Image (cartoon, rainbow, N blue to C red; front, side, top):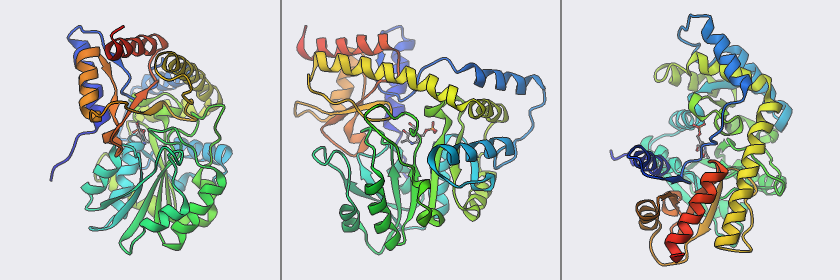
Length: 378
Ligand code: PLP
């Protein structure tokens, strides 16, 4: 079967290749919080590697990390997890991958809200599922209602992927909106995959509600978390799946037949992050909040005075003004202005483009000026 590469990864690769050729590139494509790791992470990793022996990890993850990650979910988001409800994975991405592989049967429909994270439809197709897109609109604040969900459910519907805080829009659902959506999902006996990897990157105009705080759906919920964004640890590749023990056992079996688990040193680095979670998350948050402010200042000054800042995550999703399709626009922006962006089409929303503001303020400001010069010629 054909597997389409991730659009974000492709743009990121093209940007890096340009950089390697010695060209200037402003990389506003990758959602990578570029930041020196917090010392707590590095110290924990150095201590673990200094021991000298690095055997295979336990497939489900080291107990210390599973215990800390579960406690973090309970303290921060009102969950009720213990280590048996937690599986450590190679990033949040593999938690999603394994969950879909474990849950789906051929022909099952997977409901997802567009704009969606680029990998969902491709993962679903890999496991014989059928993506069923519920398009949100800018006018509805990029959210769907419980009634929208109900309208899209058929007898083949098996899973709902819910991404809150949302990449690419930064949208956050309220407690009441979530309650209504979950009630429809429960009625239809949907399995829910909740992608919450941006849960701590929530700014002054937002408030985050985790699906783990709704015990009525806990038997049918796998929740995905990650150290990548909240702790600024993308390269370590540490994520977690949380859910009922019986599902965690299935995912562990699947992991045992695939990755064998996450590299041991990475897991100890993540222990360092969780043990110092308030310090690490505030460190990453403070940097990303400044970058978001820098991005919005440039964007408002150069393109749209009244633009509203996104409430969460690392992105700004906006409409293109011309009639050119978004992939062609982004290709030209990279070739002609040296600015890497991701086309809306990759998120299931043609006519839009996504900026990532996770790079340094200098790169953001220079990139925005380069884009402005390219579009307006001054
Ligand atoms: N989910 C969403 C919405 C994302 O944006 C990403 C990464 O960009 C991931 C999951 C996976 O991240 P990781 O595998 O680095 O944890």
